[in-house]
Image 1 (cartoon, rainbow, N blue to C red):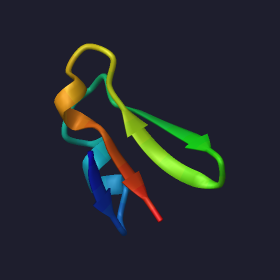
Image 2: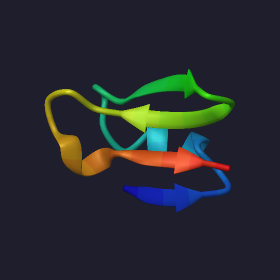
Image 3: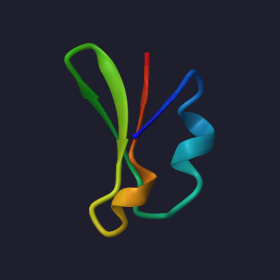
Length: 41
């Protein structure tokens, strides 16, 4: 899990990435390739 200030660049790394809001934070999750997990804030 990476913590980043910019989520937009992380979303574009893989086409299956999804941006999700949980508990006031923005997460990037990827069901097919869990390497691409990240969060902002």
